[in-house]
Length: 191
Image 1 (tube, helix red, strand yellow):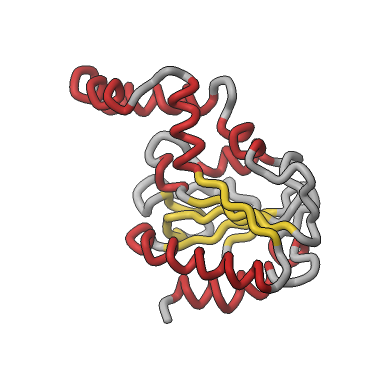
Image 2 (cartoon, helix red, strand yellow):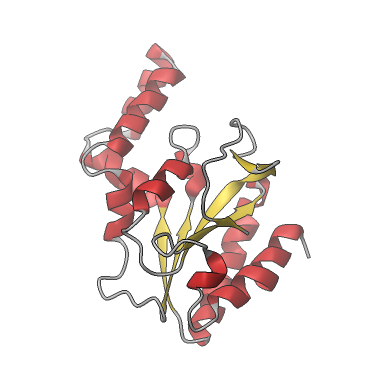
């Protein structure tokens, strides 16, 4: 088994399978979420294993909600009237930095990314039954750091949730996609 799969199956899954996993995945009552770190190059394998994890958690009596940050990004861009073609054209004509700034502004706009995520949570969420898996964070690279998303979700998420994070641990910081400078603002537990 790989390191990430060992952590997923051997550490994270048993915690999420508990009747009340919140204390096992977070030290903060108002932030019942954690970060599951994996190497960016393992994205497809992690997606496959996550699908199996969902099935196992459901068999353990959990209701699992998947929130795709790629879908949230697509919704935000559509809401702002921005197409992929426009972004590609802007990258060719004015450069990548402006495109990154534009996408970041859209994700901070109305509705902001945290609201798009919160909308996808079950209305009748129960911390003893529900588990939320936030996936496809790589879609935000390099435009939006997930540490700010987790801070903005504080107080909006009341059930155990896990952000699947493509990146590497660099000391005590996380490097998004293994590229960006380490971010030390992750308060949630890192698996």
